[in-house]
Every structure is written in structure tokens, then in C-alpha cells.
Amino acid sequence: MSLSLFIVLTLLSCVPAYAGNYTDSAHGSSSSGVDRQVIHDLGYSRGNCAHCHEMHASIKGAEPAPAGGAASPYALFAQNFDTTVISGSYAEANNFCFYCHNTTGSAQSVTNYDYSHVFGGATGGESSILDEFNQSSYHNLYDIWNFSRDAFPSWFKDNTNPCDACHNPHIAKRNWYEPQNPLLTAISKPSDHGSLWGDDEDETMKNYSSYYQAPYYYNSNTYEPAGTTSYDGSRVPDYNSFCTDCHNKDNTIFSHNLNRDLRKIDWVTTGNETDGGDKHGKNEATVSLNVRKPFASSSLGITKGFVLSCTDCHEPHGSPNVMLIRREVNGEDLPGDITSNDTVAWANLCGRCHKDDSFYGGTAGEFKYIHHYDKDAPYPGPPMGCCSCHDKDMGGGGMSKPPIKCNYCHFHGGNDRCLLDDSSKPYYPSQYTGRRCF
Ligand code: HEC
Ligand code: HEC
Ligand code: HEC
Ligand code: HEC
Ligand code: HEC
Ligand code: HEC
Ligand code: HEC
Ligand code: HEC
Image 1: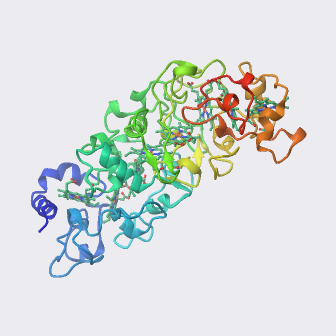
Image 2: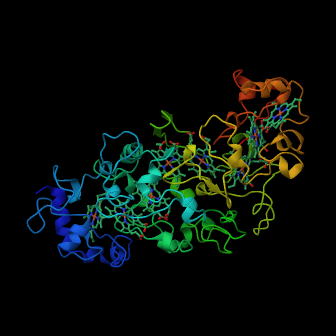
Image 3: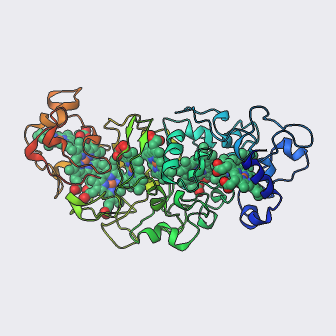
């Protein structure tokens, strides 16, 4: 018997150590928890540990499906994670969790929707965790596994499941069922794996910043996470502290999806344009801000200084857009998918919260006013020599002034430095402002 199997079996026989938390968890629930038919038929009730952990060689004389292979670590009924799978798309056998969190799960099929649906109120979307990961962009499970072994070695081992960097399967709750109740949070912070994250008052977005304004819930004037009048993040787990456990200004994180190290995220440093972090974080927007409701005329009584949550823009698992960008933001679906990083289609995202030209007598989806005519427009006038900026991405040429790919200047930590030093991009040194553009 392997050591881990021995430990599990020993613990299975003294379940009370886990009992309180486990029986309150989504998996341990006797009415909606784990329940594999083959195990159930052997006499184990719903929620029993044996639906995930089994004595490998046999339960009552036979090995329940899925059978075969070497004994799995932790005596799980299948391999925990296949570390030879460097990137998606994923199949059921790649990850233990997918035997259930999959519309066609062979052990027990579980329905789950994405963040835009559950907490944003959007309709549709993929209906299982496996399908969410198999979209245009996704959190790469191999990279998460690899990074977490280095970053959280006290508990994250070679055999640990990458999903469990963010979840603890023994305590995770069922937040989707009551999205307004963070006491039912499904997540655990990687640096605090033994407890839930979001279920204490000091673990909410309101606690992260009193300048958090929840975005609109789908098609309404109510707010995330549940379409109620609560707008201050007191019912939302503090996703910023959660995500920045990994994505902060110090950690170097490699992505196989992007084939490079990720940009570091500075959500905390104040100090405005030059030395500060992102303005969507704690650094404050400067001078004129052109935002839509509910940021405009916010119940918080401020006109700028807002602090956003990562999940206002991002999904945690995967998305039909690049970079895990939500399909629905601030109460409405994006007007179109964002299928590449290098694109003018970022306007689909920005326009959900910022005022496009339609608010100033121009055309929806265009942003000429903000950049050329506003009182703190970065390129007022507009400056002559339009082609130095506008013709870099031409199809149209001459008079058409086609839009410029937003990601030359707008990205985490970015500014308009390309104007100063990259002639393959918009290049116009005298127009350089150095303003923090995100
Ligand atoms: C034997 C089937 C099974 C396996 C294997 C399984 N789950 Fe679950 N999981 C469930 C069921 C059933 C629920 C409850 C679904 C509900 O409440 O609607 C659930 C709920 C959850 C929840 C709480 C959110 C929710 O939908 O209620 C999380 C988080 C979760 N599972 C993560 C995991 C992770 C991570 C793994 C792998 C380490 C895993 N699960 C493996 C069956 C399983
Ligand atoms: C356990 C560490 C960890 C946590 C927590 C974490 N991430 Fe990541 N994230 C990674 C790793 C590793 C990568 C690189 C692999 C990849 O690109 O998917 C990554 C990549 C990303 C990417 C780029 C995805 C792409 O490939 O297009 C985005 C966007 C992202 N994370 C957002 C978030 C958000 C939002 C949260 C919080 C809800 C979060 N992350 C929490 C580890 C983490
Ligand atoms: C939804 C599936 C699931 C259920 C149900 C479940 N476990 Fe686990 N357990 C896991 C996974 C997966 C691991 C491997 C560690 C990891 O990847 O996070 C694990 C690991 C363990 C470990 C090794 C130490 C640790 O915490 O990592 C022990 C002990 C354990 N489980 C005991 C139990 C007991 C006792 C029960 C019932 C009270 C139970 N498990 C129910 C999925 C489950
Ligand atoms: C980078 C962190 C991260 C990783 C990795 C991750 N999740 Fe999640 N997961 C989240 C967050 C954040 C939520 C949204 C909060 C919530 O639903 O309560 C979530 C929600 C869930 C839910 C509940 C969905 C619902 O119905 O609302 C399930 C089930 C789940 N995850 C399973 C998994 C499985 C299985 C994996 C691995 C294949 C995984 N997660 C990997 C962060 C993560
Ligand atoms: C206002 C919307 C918005 C918010 C809020 C937001 N992001 Fe992003 N995020 C984006 C956009 C747009 C991109 C693509 C541009 C880029 O790569 O920076 C992106 C890209 C990323 C990437 C990939 C960076 C790379 O290397 O290209 C990571 C990681 C990430 N975000 C994490 C986070 C985390 C963590 C938070 C919260 C602390 C967060 N984001 C908050 C919009 C947002
Ligand atoms: C979920 C809503 C939301 C989305 C989506 C969003 N923003 Fe913002 N943005 C805000 C809010 C709110 C502020 C104000 C922050 C503050 O008050 O400090 C802001 C501030 C800014 C600022 C600082 C303005 C100044 O005057 O200093 C820039 C630049 C900006 N956003 C660009 C973008 C771009 C580009 C996109 C699309 C890629 C985008 N934003 C998407 C809500 C959003
Ligand atoms: C220093 C760079 C720069 C110069 C020079 C410049 N623009 Fe712009 N312009 C921008 C940026 C940045 C935007 C916002 C992104 C976008 O919409 O293309 C913009 C937006 C526009 C738009 C809206 C495009 C759309 O479809 O969204 C028009 C039209 C426009 N500018 C016309 C002009 C004209 C006419 C000139 C010359 C008289 C000019 N611009 C000079 C940077 C510049
Ligand atoms: C050449 C660099 C550059 C490009 C390309 C660019 N922008 Fe900007 N943008 C800026 C600068 C500089 C600001 C001003 C930041 C500030 O207010 O401090 C800005 C501000 C913004 C704001 C915030 C307005 C506010 O005050 O609320 C939005 C939204 C925005 N841009 C959207 C876009 C979109 C959409 C595109 C692509 C279609 C784009 N930008 C392309 C440089 C650029």
C-alpha cells in the first residue's frame, strides 16, 4: 500500500476530523454532493468520500469504473492530472475533476456556467467546467500546476491537481446557488489553501477598497453578483487579493498559451501617471474620466478613484474572447468577440464602461472624442500628420483614418511609449504623453 493511500484510508476511517466543513461543502452534501452510480450501487451514500477516493484494487471485490492503470496518488479513482498535457484542448482523462465537471462526465455529469452567467446574469454560455476550459482562451492547467509547485510548495505537490491551486475540494461550497452569499464561496486563496476565501468580512471587495463600484447585472439597473441593490462589493469575494496571490508585480509567470512570460500586474501602487500602477486598480484616474453608469453618478458619491475587480473584466476558467475576457461586462454582452490580442476590437470591451463617440454626437464603437477633443485629450486637435498614427494599420488609406489597434498603448502597465520609440507602430515623438493607459 502506498503511503498516500495509507494516509487516505486512515483518514477515511476517522472522518469526523473533516466532518463539519466537509459535510457543509458542495461535494460532501448529502442532497447534491458527489454521487457516482457505481459507488452508490455498492452502498455508499451521496457525499461519501468514496465517490472520489477508493481502495484501488477493489471495493467489495471489483474495481469500479473507470478501472485500470497504476494506483493513482491519493487513492483517487483516476489519475489526478496528466502532466504530459502541456496545453488544451482538454479531454476527460486529462484531469480527475473532468470525470464529473463535464457535460458528458462518465463518473457523474455536473452542470456549471461561467462567471458572466452565474454572477453577471448573462444567458447561455458553456455549461460545464471542461467546456469552459476548451474555449479560445483559458487558464493553462499545466502552467498553473508548474507555477504553483514553485510558488506554494508548502502544500502544492507534484501530484496536486492544478484546479486545487484555486479550490479546495474538501471545503468548496456552492456559490452559484445563492450568488449573493459569499459565505458559500467556492474558492480558496492559493496561499491559504486550508480555508475558504470570501467568507469573512475582511475578504470581500468592499474590504479591498471602499471605492469598489459593482457593475450592472445583465439587462438591469441592479448590480452584480446577484441582481440586487447591493453595489459596494460587500457580497463579492475579494478577487483582487485572490488573483494577485499569483499575478502581482513580483512573480514571473510563464504562459505556454502566449509563449512568453506574462506582464506583471500592479494593482496597488498609487502615484498617478509615471510611477503608479494600473488606474483600474488603486492608482487614480487623472483629470477627465469618461465613464458610463453605474460609474457615472455612482452611489459611492465619487467621480473618480474607482478600483475595479479582476472579475469585472475576466473569467477565471476560459472565454470565447482572448485573455479570459468576459463575454458580458457591465450589464450587456460585448457587441462582438475579441479574437486576437492585436486588434481594434478591444473597443468592444472598453465601450462597455467608457463613453464612445455616440455619447458625443458621433459613431458608436469609435473613440475619437476621448483622444482628440476631450478637455484632457492626449492628442488634441487632432494633430496634423494623421498618418503617423492612423496609417500604420491601414487597409483604407488616405482620408479614412482607420482606427488604431488599441493594444499599442492600452494594456496592464502600459502607456503610449510606442509613439516615442517604435516606428513600426504609431510613431510621433512630440505627441508622447507618458500617461498610464490602463
Ligand atoms: C465524483 C464527481 C466529482 C468529482 C470527481 C469532482 N466534483 Fe466537484 N462537484 C461535484 C458535484 C456533484 C458538485 C455539486 C454540484 C452542485 O452543487 O450543483 C460539485 C461541486 C464543486 C464545486 C462547488 C461549486 C458548485 O458547482 O457547486 C467546486 C469548486 C468543485 N466541485 C470543484 C471540483 C474540483 C476542483 C474537482 C477535482 C479536484 C472536483 N470538483 C471533482 C462532483 C464532482
Ligand atoms: C495559482 C496561480 C494563479 C491564480 C490564483 C490566477 N492565475 Fe491567472 N495565470 C496563472 C498562470 C500560471 C498563467 C499562465 C498560463 C496561461 O496563460 O493560462 C495565467 C494566465 C492568466 C491570463 C492570461 C491567459 C491567456 O493565456 O490568455 C489571464 C488573463 C489571467 N491569468 C487572469 C487571472 C485572473 C483574472 C485571476 C483571478 C480570478 C487569476 N488569473 C488567478 C496563474 C494564476
Ligand atoms: C470531489 C472529490 C473528493 C472528495 C469527495 C474527497 N476528496 Fe480527498 N482529495 C481529493 C483530491 C483531488 C485530493 C488530492 C490533492 C489535491 O489534488 O488537491 C485529495 C486528497 C486527500 C487527502 C490527502 C491530503 C490533502 O488534503 O491533500 C486526504 C487525507 C483526503 N483527500 C481525505 C478525504 C476525506 C476524508 C474525504 C471525505 C471526508 C475526502 N477526501 C473527499 C478529492 C476528493
Ligand atoms: C485561477 C484560479 C482557478 C482555477 C485554476 C480553477 N478555478 Fe474554478 N473557479 C475559480 C473562480 C474565481 C470561480 C468563480 C467563483 C465561484 O464560482 O464561486 C470558480 C468557479 C468554479 C466552479 C463553480 C462554477 C459555478 O457553477 O459557479 C467550479 C465547479 C469550478 N470552479 C471547478 C474548477 C475545476 C474543475 C477546475 C480545474 C479544471 C478549476 N475550477 C480551476 C477559480 C479557478
Ligand atoms: C478593465 C478591464 C480589466 C480589469 C479590471 C483587469 N484586466 Fe487583466 N486584462 C485586461 C485586458 C484588456 C487584457 C489584455 C491586454 C494585456 O495583455 O494587458 C488583460 C490581460 C491580463 C493578463 C495577461 C497579461 C499579458 O501578459 O498580456 C493577466 C495575467 C491579467 N489580465 C490579469 C488581471 C488581474 C490579476 C486583474 C485584477 C488584479 C485584472 N487582470 C484586471 C482587462 C482587465
Ligand atoms: C468594467 C468597466 C471598465 C472596462 C471594461 C474598462 N474600463 Fe477603463 N476605467 C473604468 C473605470 C471605472 C475607470 C476609473 C478608474 C479610477 O477612477 O481611478 C477607468 C479608467 C481608465 C483609464 C484612466 C483614465 C484617466 O483619465 O486617467 C483609462 C486610460 C482606461 N480606463 C482605459 C480603458 C480601456 C482602453 C479599456 C478597454 C481595453 C477599458 N478602460 C475598459 C472602467 C472600465
Ligand atoms: C498621435 C497619434 C494620432 C494622430 C497624429 C492622430 N490621431 Fe486620430 N486617433 C488617435 C488615437 C489613439 C485614436 C483612438 C483609437 C482609434 O479609434 O483609432 C484616434 C481616433 C481617431 C478617429 C476615430 C477612429 C475610429 O474609427 O474609431 C478619427 C476619425 C481620427 N482619430 C481622426 C484623426 C485625424 C483626422 C487626424 C489628423 C488630423 C488624426 N486623427 C491624428 C491617435 C492619433
Ligand atoms: C497611441 C496610443 C493609443 C492608442 C493606439 C489608443 N489609445 Fe486610448 N488612450 C490613449 C491615451 C494616452 C489616453 C489617455 C489616458 C489618460 O486619460 O490619462 C487614452 C484614453 C483612453 C480611454 C479612457 C478615456 C476616459 O477618460 O475615460 C479609453 C476608453 C480609450 N483610450 C480607448 C481606446 C480604444 C478603444 C482604442 C483602440 C480602438 C485606443 N484607445 C487606442 C492612448 C491610445
